[in-house]
Length: 214
Image 1 (cartoon, rainbow, N blue to C red):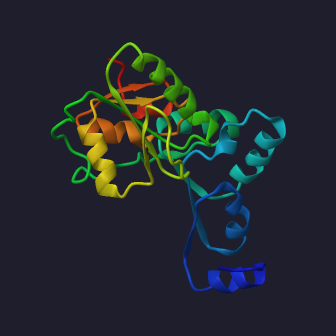
Image 2 (cartoon, rainbow, N blue to C red):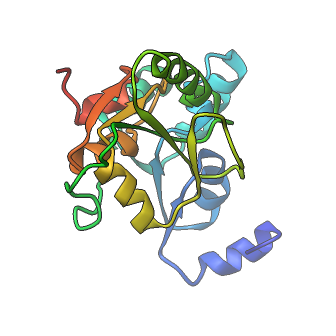
């Protein structure tokens, strides 16, 4: 933790490399460290169509920093928007944690994500699943990573589960639904696939790194 550029300079004298987890760290780190890496995982700003945001990111992305990203979709996006060619290092998952197994006795559809993040489309997906549930008999499980939501009618809400519980729901559910409008990579559909669970997803860009229609 540091509170001034003077302190950051002292920190930089002890290390050879700095890793920037967000684009607005690039300038102060590049000023003081000999080598800086930036692994962009798709900050919300990078998908903005506002001219001032695009221009701001262009300035940061023009710095002499080695950049990597998580998918061909995001690499193409950055190339088009920021005129920067960056290497792709796809995300990975732990196959010891996410693997196939027995399913719930009752048909179960799984949704994972934070409703507060608009582009995740969680509320919209749940609304449509509830309409479908009126005609078909199945359970809806919503894994809610952040908010403390106590109860939603006709939906089983699981708040911030531990890794074992999360993997269990992936493994035992029959279908996983992702309605995200845009994703850089999107781990949940991949975790579901590794767990032997069928996936229905919007074509959000990032899923094309590993998903094939049909």
